[in-house]
Length: 338
Ligand SMILES: C[S@@+](CC[C@H](N)C(=O)[O-])C[C@H]1O[C@@H](n2cnc3c(N)ncnc32)[C@H](O)[C@@H]1O
Image (cartoon, rainbow, N blue to C red; front, top):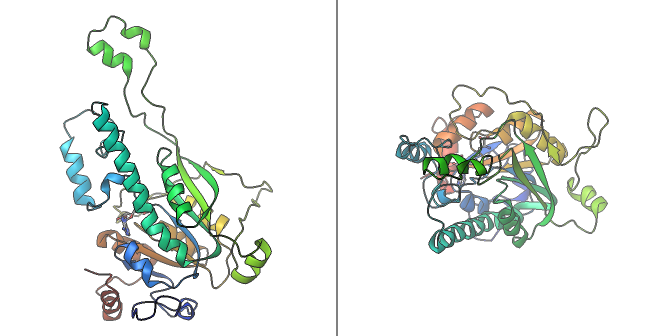
């Protein structure tokens, strides 16, 4: 065992490289990743590609449909374009006084601390040289990177995922002034409180190599990017033009990433060696895991919400929990089901 002695729920490295161990390979665990990551052995994961909640106001709250619906209902009557803006996120309204900025600052520092709490465990379970890619917004990515560097990772890049559309959020100043009867409203035509957001950030960090790329590659089968594209070009750090497929009708998750995008990231970051396992500790409906599976790689997902976990299981062709006593019993034993 590589994890702390006495912990009966840990998994040994040997088990992780054994394809028959359901918990370690090709599985989806249900629970808080900050707890469940502790049950995995160190240096056992080839790459972590994940999409955690960006909305730090969700931390400490339930992150489920009921909560999202509650927020939508609260503002149903308003004519705001973006309906699920988290409170205090800096995107919602409010008087910009010292209290507002202090709350905003506290929120982002709490978020950074939360990222560190799972980032430190991801660091422990990654092999030397493993690449970790974390989606985030352009406003919050710096905090994710700082948290992951504090956990021990080394910053490598920031990939731009260019989406096809972006809705302008914020204040149309001229319209607002006109509404207030300001005679100078026209002068401010075209001025806005923000730019149209058209990309998402993917923070890319790496667990330190063992001496150099070659030694790390030979010993751990990780450490490099696959940069040769089929058309002969060298892969850049901007991903665009990736089509979004229609989601399965049972997939009601509200932030599903395009499968083409996740396949591209897995292809770029994970050598297809038999022992390599792709981790997604914020699996949602399981798109990262589906991508890994399609590429013939082993995967391990964690999702806190049972409903989303069931969707991911269906996409992955895994048995639903509760239908097999073995899975449920073991997950209960690990404290993964409440
Ligand atoms: C942005 S979504 C991921 C969506 C995913 N990329 C997909 O394509 O379906 C983030 C997910 O993290 C889950 N989550 C939030 N906090 C978590 C925690 N502490 N442990 C595990 N999962 C968590 C949420 O329930 C949510 O499904």
